[in-house]
Length: 185
Ligand SMILES: [Fe+2]
Ligand SMILES: [Fe+2]
Image (cartoon, rainbow, N blue to C red):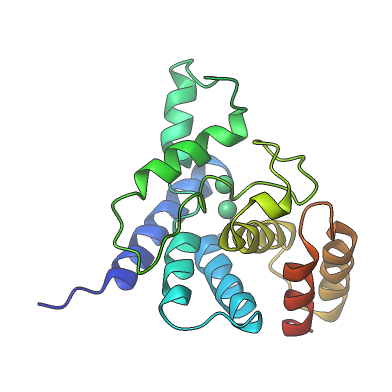
């Protein structure tokens, strides 16, 4: 029997987006857009084959632990071991995905999906300490949240492009930014 892992995860991701739309006001299909942008960016960087499926799965489920984290916070147990609140959903989310049958190693992709290139993220990791997939997802996630208005005219793109360029070496590393800007003109 064949099992469509990506299809199943896309359905889970849609369900998670619906919950997160209620909880943290993400826009509809946020994770699918992040996955689409992430896979296109990775392809531009020369990544091919099954690795792209792994990336798509991670991107679809990047915020899989948001609801769990909020539940935990409601129980007044949010800060543990000095990990910031933002990092908590990354820690839980990384653990949740450890039994997903990825094709290759994708350790620490969910764990570090909020790390900034300059080390100002929740775990203080600089871009070169963070797996490439986590850096790509972080950039695409942040861009999708920035574009919340859902308008797609040239003014909106100009604003987004300026944000991406301004964020180079601060939020996002230059390799990711350059690939993204070459792709989405
Ligand atoms: Fe997140
Ligand atoms: Fe997100």
